[in-house]
Length: 410
Image (cartoon, rainbow, N blue to C red; front, top):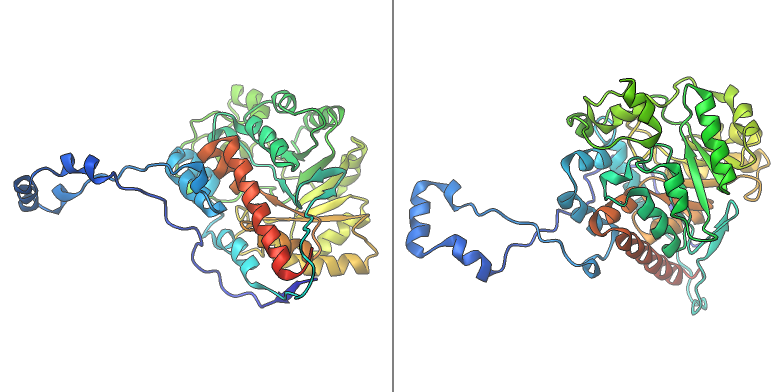
């Protein structure tokens, strides 16, 4: 193991996202707007407002994207305000949102030297699905807010990038449309929000299983959706989730405070450990819990006969000041070992804040089977469509290969 000097957690710092990529028009385009020297002097006499020239965002070519933060900067400029408010927002003061990536930065490297690293192999498999690197696209709701291709575009990009995609329950496209977008032999996971009317969830799960979906990730960190104030300031007017179509017709969807409030009515706040036997009984798929945030709950999931868990705080969108998944990972792995679990019998995943190949490396070195990425998928989709997603994954692969070589871990 090349990693494992983990320093103590410090206070959350400022956002690590760079400022938006803006380009001023070239001089030949800008000069007519500026006018003659006499006109400029006249505007100066009129006050500073008259001198202001509107900056127009010019989207860089896809080849100019060098990291996931570049995609975020472009997405901020190209997405509709409602969509940006929903995707970028975090819970309350967004402390956990900011800290998710910084937690990875607090883990330092311990490289070994003089190791033959000519050949690097980052391919792996988990939950019966193969992957070009230890990464999957995690479920994110309402992908059409990012791009008209929505979840269908993500399915196609996942195949091209060689990673599994976790289909979301609260999707813009129907389940049939997402499944139809698969290529032959493509492996998918699925995420489940349990509905108060359990028969609706059971019908949905059986449809997933019949379609050959590999594993079911049950979201357990959202009995109530968090206060995401950037999103709440917008009245949600875009297309809602497919599974809520009937609820919309009956007037049970509140669109007055953003997308989060609009989709919250679908989720059952009464879901508890007593429901785990029922979840296992309705499918032969592997069932995992998505949203575990402490060692005790991970051990309970193992003892309940589940196939694994995702250490996640819902992308910093739920209870603010929670620890990041990567920070919880060491205590979870230790507790699971003491309980008798092995990596073969119980898979642990991490999502939240993964932005670099080094983040993937650190999570795997600390015991995770793979990591999930959400916002980077949406931002690259919003910026450049499915081609953007594929490039984003290739950049993470390049970064991970470099880290593996420099750490002496082929």
